[in-house]
Image (cartoon, rainbow, N blue to C red; front, side, top):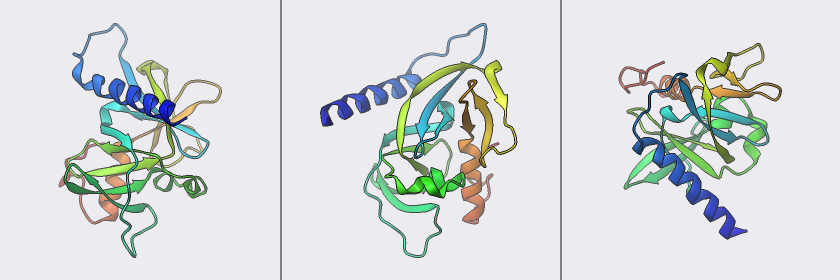
Length: 178
């Protein structure tokens, strides 16, 4: 079982890293590359373009007295980075009981990691197939992906901006955009 997890992790990591190495190809229909993640049982999508990295969750150093969204600090290439619960940031505290096994680094000047339960894969979706959110969408959801059991597309930039506001920093200071 452990070997299978390691193989899946390596395959996903290589696929994710390759996204940034391959040249952009003009297509008749613009595609959006999505990372599909699981928070507890529900699945959500994140735009790969909004992410700077994907990794297995590491040991978190908790910060006494921190708000509930902030899990603590993790070491990343010799520096400390704040790691937040993606479930808590979208208002799903019931999903936070399952262990966060994965994390993504937000593509913004301010280093922020988001932790979640699992990665289920990636997909390319034509931009035209993204549908506006409907009532009942979680915070930071911008679109739905797919039909039937649609997944919410979460805005990593919106989440990072909300974190910046809570911590007293402004979006312009941190290089964030909508």
